[in-house]
Image (tube, rainbow, N blue to C red; front, top):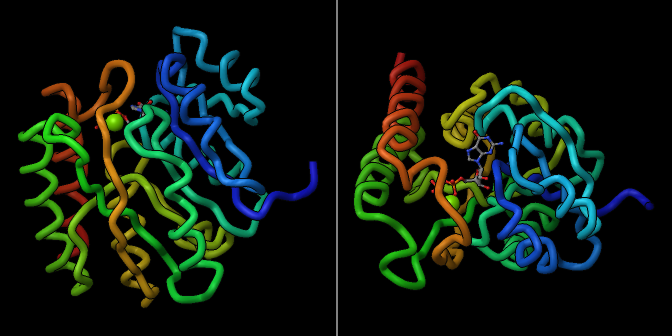
Length: 222
Ligand SMILES: Nc1nc2c(ncn2[C@@H]2O[C@H](COP(=O)(O)OP(=O)(O)O)[C@@H](O)[C@H]2O)c(=O)[nH]1
Ligand SMILES: [Mg+2]
């Protein structure tokens, strides 16, 4: 396969039900890199059957998977998307366009729920509070710490991201801001996922996410 224009990193923990929907919706010229984070279902097999590249990352954690995908990528632009069908990879195209045209160094998708139940209230409230702190820390008018995003691969690598859990997306924004990147946020539809949530749909996941993100914000304030 020739080097794709865009590599799409899809962190995956037991998403066999959602993957066919997700992987059939990548724009032409985009390559899917499914990072299997120790799934106990058939996620890896389903991903391979759908034509995706599969990377196995045994160390658990969203950031661990996302970063393994970034390291495996070879395309000039790398995008990130969840593998749970809550967002449509086709909606990555406008984010990628912002990066490829040079309008943004980091393009972020702001999740806009299509129906109320797409986003549980506790997750939405926590996200809003964290986004407010992120705005204060960076001075950039951002409203979400969502996973959908795009940037140039080499630039992303140069950020030297360290978080391997839920703080990864936030660390990316904080370091991009510190490096004076142009960070742009646009709306992306957010729908109910297929299958069961691993992070904000559970109390434990939400608490870990808030903990990881608050400690990053505290550090950045120092
Ligand atoms: N690799 C990896 N992926 C994860 C982990 N937890 C969640 N994911 C994936 O990250 C994405 C977001 O997780 P999800 O459970 O939908 O969280 P929510 O959107 O906050 O409910 C999905 O694609 C999951 O499969 C993890 O520990 N490791
Ligand atoms: Mg989700």
